[in-house]
Image 1 (cartoon, chains in turn purple, blue):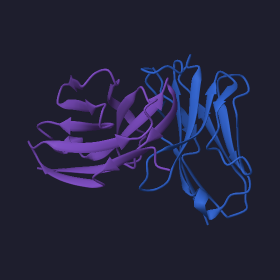
Image 2 (cartoon, chains in turn cyan, yellow):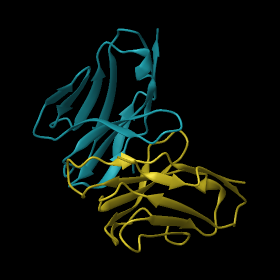
Image 3 (cartoon, one colour):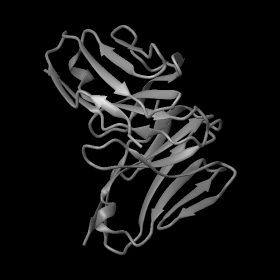
Image 4 (tube, chains in turn yellow, orange):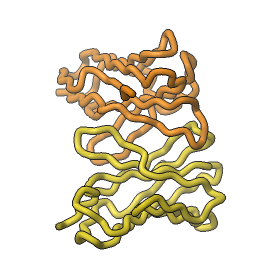
Length: 111
Length: 115
């Protein structure tokens, strides 16, 4: 059973555009929702994270929107740059344990 | 600060052979995770250690996979015997403690190909 569902599988965006990646979860016990960025040949790196009592968190060009009632959260990348081209994973965990990752979104930003 | 170290980086074996991966977490990190990342999928947690004790191994195929963290620092993940479907990248991660907002730092992974 997929604990965290992620879409789209791949995304192509023009430079300067907005990239949006969506995730949904079932387990209401999850209390931490991080997003990771992964470049080829590297391990994932934490990008931004949110807890369920906050509806939005912004760090630079990256924003997480969180909808607790719908059990959905999304990553928005504003002013997308070619250097943002990578695979993005959403994840969910309970109390720092039992991390579940989405299936990943391959983002390509075209110059 | 040195990151999470893993070795080897690549390994090719035949099915039914055994293989072992090594991980050295960031100094002082009490929590260590092993993940399996199959091509095109997200990482799947195999086992989580807090110091040298197992916190969660619910998704570890215990008939063939084993892991240890004897002194609460380095860890070894073993597959014995390997199957074709074990071909994947094995990622090690560590965090200071297992706490909600604690950042996990990932190593570069070991890419395993089972023929």
